[in-house]
Length: 322
Figure 1 (cartoon, one colour):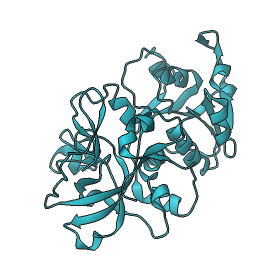
Figure 2 (cartoon, rainbow, N blue to C red):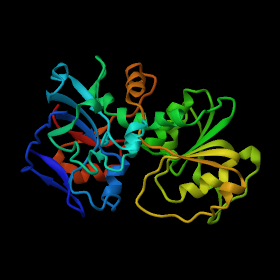
Figure 3 (cartoon, one colour):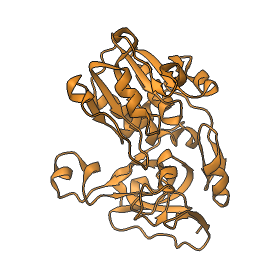
């Protein structure tokens, strides 16, 4: 079958990858659409140095074979993480942190291929009437919704999102549904225009004087700050614009390290929350009910993966089985 694989150095297109066989607890999925995530780009920079195999984890597919016969022929999306089912993390509802977990597209063959296998219990059926082109946003939207699971957001206060990319756009839409006063801080004026229907927008440069972040009054800061810039400098800005005793939610996943003054966190009693994968069913519900909307995905054939990865569209990916 056709697939885009990571060889430890770069993404390569192949047409000789064997179609996988589903195990007794798995389903075989025919991939319809697969989207590129920022994490996929980070893998190419060394984020998962030990991984070799088919890339990708955001997909919509059709069930071809399954241990659950009722799913055969159904359109589905799927979660990333399969735990061992026996460790402390799996037994206490923290499967996505299992030390032996398998993650599609990162430690297990993913969805940038014509077919993929996945544990059946990780699948979620796409509601009738929800197109694959929209359903493919389920996984990243679920990651945005995870914030509302982890942090109680008082809608009478204010929040900021650092970043003007794809994940920031989803996060901002989710936060705006709470009614909270929302500001989005980004580098690109053209991208920030997309946020204007539901948030105030500020250019990143407005927070700087030369190379340094300018000093701010408490009134100019935020109770909640979501760092979704995908850049190592984002955490520094987050620490500068969050109010004392405020909350920072870290969403960026990037291959690299950053230097920050850790004393700011205990001295100002800042709560820092790491956040990643989230709940699929609420994400599907929001998409089905048109409570959130996103620009169209720019879709390519698998053989054109270099163009897809280089795309500056809101979201790019692959049209595979449609």
